[in-house]
Every structure is written in C-alpha cells, then in structure tokens.
Length: 490
Image (tube, rainbow, N blue to C red):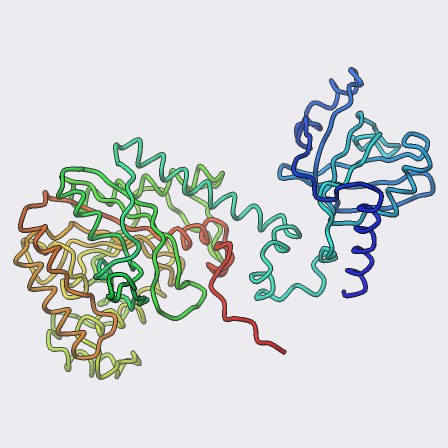
C-alpha cells in the first residue's frame, strides 16, 4: 500500500510540474452517464461532443487503444481512447498520470465498439481529482463487516447494493413526510439537549453545559416537547428526530438512531392503528416492493391491511402460558418468570418483569405483522388508561419477523393528576435501581394542567423500518456511519 501511494504521489507531482492542477475547483459536465446512454442514438446522429465526469473504475490498455470505465452518481459508461485520435503525446501522458480511482472529465462523441457496447470516444481526458490510495479490488481484503462500516466511503464505492440501501432510506423518509404533510401534519423541531430526558424508558447520555453550569441530556425521544406543541394549539405535528440512548449495541440497536414521532389531536389509538397501517403500506409500495410478499430473512411477510391484532394479555397467555391478571404482585410474577427461564434482576420493577416476559416469549413467536395492544398501564407511563379497565393502557406496537418490533403508539395521557402519579411511580422505580425507568417532568405536568386535547401519537424507528424493507440483517447496514468502538492502535 505504501509503495502504491508513493507511485501515485509521483504522478501527482508530474501533473503539478507540467502546470496541471490536479484538484481544480470546478469541472464541466453536459450529461450524466445515464442521460448520455438514454440519448445515445440522437447524439450519435448529431456527432456533437459531450462532456461527462466520473471516477475511473477500470483502465486497460491494448496497444494504441485504451478502455476506461467511469462511474458517476447515476451509473457508469465505457470510455474509448484511441492514440490516433488524441495523439501519441497525449496518449502517453494519459497512461503516465492516470490511475483507477481518479476523478476525470472526458469529452467526446458516441461510439459503438466491435462488441456492440455503446461508449464515448474521447478526444480529451482531464484529471479533476487525483486519488492517492487505490480502490479495493473487488472488495478483496475488505469483506470484514466492521471494516466496511469503518470505511463506509469504500463500501459505497465498491458495493452497488449498499448505495441502493441508502437510496431506499431516503425514499422512506420522503414518503413518510409526504404522507404526514398530506394529512395536515406540521413538521417541527424540538430540543436535542434537554434538562429532563423524557418520553421513553431508556438510559440517557449525560453532558454538561458550561455557561449554565448544569448537567443536560441528549434526548431519548422528542415526545414531551411535541405534546407541548399540541397543547399549544397545533393539532397535528411530527418530527424526524435524531435520538440517543446509552445502551448496548446489537443488530437492532445503535446508540444514535432516527425515529419519526407524530401526534394527532382528536384521534385515539384505534383510529391511529389504521392511520399508521396505511402509511407503512404506502412506504413499502413507494420503495417498489410488494406489500403482500415482502422478503425478510427467511420469511415472506404480508403487510396487506388489516394487520393481525392481539391484546398484550392474550399474547402472553398464548405464548408464555401466563395470565398476567393472576400475578399483580411483583415478587409472585418474578418467581413464575424465573421458573420459565426469564432473567429477572432484583432491581427489576413489576413493569420490567412484565416487559421481560413479553420480550422472551411473545416477540420471537410472531412472524406476520401483528399489532399487540392494550398493554399494562405500568409498562407505559405516558399512555391513557382504558376507561373500562384502568389496569391497561390504550397502547399498541407492531411486531413481525419473529422478534422484530417497530412502531410504538398510544392514546396520549392528558390527565395531569394521573400523569403526576405515574411519574412518581417511575421515580420510585429509578430510586430502587431501575436505570431505565422514566424521569419525572414537573414542567410537562404543568403543561397538562393547562390542558391538552385528546390526542394519539406514534413513533416509528426509521433504521428498523429500512432494515426490513432492504432485508438487512442488522441496522448497521442501513445507518451510514454506525457507532463503533475506536480502533486499537497496533
């Protein structure tokens, strides 16, 4: 590698000594490679020279004939360089200064090779960015997934399917925005730095604000601020939010992730199920996929509406053979859970034990898209209790693919007295050692005391959604620059 770089540096110096700027500020382009090929027949008739730009991906010489493949953001094109056309001096100069990986500007006319490949016959090739390191040769030596994530730029250069993943991600976000905008939801921005990290049960990242001399937190969710907007009079709001949780890293978790949260006044969780269902199906189809036959891992998922529905209690009864209504005492439920192989810590609250049972038995058993709904109120301190049975909350989650979970939603709790009591329960759980219990937020309770209309809201994890749509085994595949441990110095 060092020898290769030295050779390229020598070519760089040769360019500079000859008065050529190897890193000009601008370049000239008439067409992309895809546009050139699409207009090939008309351009061939006109014989009008066109200028294209791109990275050199292949470069091979056959006597007085050289074939170069360039790639731009749209596609790729073969460039044919003939010594008889460019002249012997320029032909030799090209080979003395050009390497695979360089960005070039080429000009010329359409040309069909003997093998029938539509190409561009160049009359000029100009280096516009000299590469000092070689590209991976068909990805040999860089198949290790961690190296791919660390050197994502090379991953994008070498693997077309990786570039396609991030185009899908962009399509997912634009489609969600379009759907919500069409339904009169207003996009807003809320603080990333927060004095109280509310809106979810998670361990936050802590930082310190020097000027105010206070500790602050990176947000774990935008929920409480979005609901402040609803209380302030905006009936439908959403945010594409970058969130942070100081937790483990695995195929489904990254400390920094993206979610879309949306809150709609005068809607309940049953109406919201249909609203979200339609949105997800629209996203699937916008990505060019069949909602009824979506390949994921070794399964074929059917997202055709309506999705299956099952209450939390029925799901735990079916898959764990535990009737949660028979175990309202934390210690009794913990004993049953441990007998069935569910890990339980001494500091786990009743909420945590219930959640662990659900994660251990229910999620891995569900293959087809299913709404699990009516969760125990103790699991979700921000959701409204069911009027007919206040032990449960009007909440649902989407589960699919034998263990995958995305979309959390509920009828929002707008009773300030109930909210204050449930924040107190969370505070007690934190003081007892549950580091993922939610923080109480007195300011938000005050917001509810001023009044918030009946509201339903959802959060959907973009990373997990894109992983499903691209059939990726890990969310690291769909995050351009995932969080990684720093490389050790050898």
